[in-house]
Length: 326
Image (cartoon, rainbow, N blue to C red):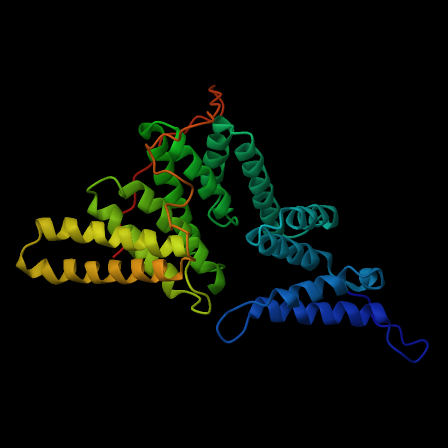
């Protein structure tokens, strides 16, 4: 709780003013502009005020911890790994006893991100599989480290046999979709979360004739692209979505009765539009490709990956898949 301002000398304590300004800046950052876009400069300004030593007696540390974790995510998206790591470490030091369960859960999610990053750097597939399994089993109300989970899944899909990676990816997709409909998910977060889920659905369906899984991927790509229109989708997301729509269109066309012809035509048109949009945005000499490298089943050449097998981290029995949306 912020301390009362000091009026003994007829003025207001500078630290109190800094803490109040930080609170306003952080609130404006979370609100975003009229398009839902958040300005990271507001977050930087809020933290500069809160971390000023004069503001320490007046600030609300749980709010500072949440702001630091938000900035760590921003920095991670910008590939500022040292900056993101510094914010996470400071958040841990400031985390007060008795803070909300939500803040504690967010710190656990951050820890999972760091562990996945470390296991990825070490090419430790067994550890990645154990981490992915643990994240998937997290409570529905806990913040989900979606990017870390998908990163682990992509690596596992490239290097494990299909009968091992496919059930894991299916469970990860189900868990991310739970996060996608959670009421606490902000509008700016819908695009990346839906995009991550779409990528997993595409990985599961791209080398199959599974129309339900491909339709699920299309639904998720549409959700991602429709959200937070202030920023365009990534090139890879557009190209993958285009390939998915074209593949589903061919399946529908091959087995369609006359009444379903327009459905196939709509998918072809949508797939072509997405593909062209992605290719048009690709810089010269850059080829948009499947994120994470080769597709599942395409064994990479060159340096091998160590797979340390053992009892720990084995996938658990998998539940029933949910039907494809729409």
